[in-house]
Image (tube, rainbow, N blue to C red):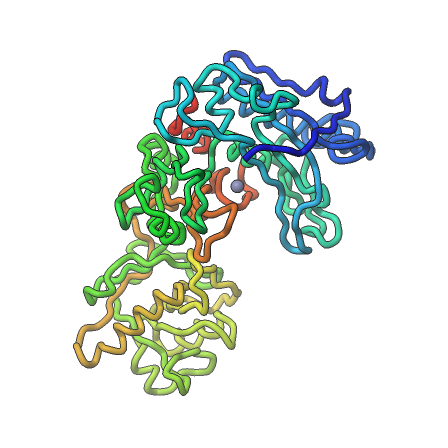
Length: 479
Ligand SMILES: [Zn+2]
């Protein structure tokens, strides 16, 4: 957890990098780049979006200083927060890239003022709670509390080609750049405490003790926090996409005030063994989902393949038309475009389409495609959910119990919250090391700063009424 990288520093930049805000916290950006690299890149640039820096390095530093100012205003600490900041190559391809990463350099427990015993706190928060700097005795040379490293190649060929960082301070990045300020506010959020130090792949807590995060991270299906679980339970919980929630009332009360009411869902009402609300991907074609939606209709499968599955890539047979007419058609993903399937089941008289994905990824992917002639709504569900419904459908003739469902907007939920009013945490299946459980879920609407991906509609606020990041940090101990 300790940073051992030596910090190189150009004196001119380091000298001016402390930011102080009144009655708040001081965040110091300690430049870790060598000459002519990163913050010291001398390439001349034009002013952009309120950033008056004259070199690429200067502009980068001004964005860091703005992020330090914004966080410094929100937080309170008597101990300066030192961020070791630098630019280096990070993993990327032409179409995707790690933008940057940051984290706490060290963790502390059972210091004077620790709210919960036997629990890890990131150093910046531990310092704020203790009221003294807990680091110098451990790392007297340069004691950073947070390390932040950003992708120096972003936008160059082969590294999210053509999508460089936007260095303006006005959240006006447009469609061909990534807002560095938002990315940085996000990464500093992690460093300040928006993360667990427990490993979601093994379930193992750091040195067998929970992080403060784990006292709030809750599995709704077990009704337990991560601090109360075994390693095996945590591993299972890490991929329980619709069940992993935040258990703290401050965040959930605030989330109910800003997240949009009504979430897209497939709600099965019969038979009893498959009753429930299933997570869906929506479609880019056909009408938007509405409430109550296509309500209480029978689901029937299209069967047009030798193995008993149905692709609906050609006009439906008379038997399939008879099966799905007036009902919700269940088809399998693949072979042809989603819009072709929708057109075929629509022509057969189906009132909606459920596509069963080939993957078990949650949340299910969006169904893409364009066809203005599609008038029925379509949703995508995960493979295992689809198989559950198929099993129920297969036993239908024997038990004469129809599978009945509603495709629409579930008004009992807010987008990104569960039916009990708790915000969903990011728990994709399979687990994503570095992202899983330490972010809000991607279904939160409007988008939040601490979702795993930086969305274009984010501003530069970390506080209510725009954002929940500071609220969560308060809940774990920041004041
Ligand atoms: Zn993140």
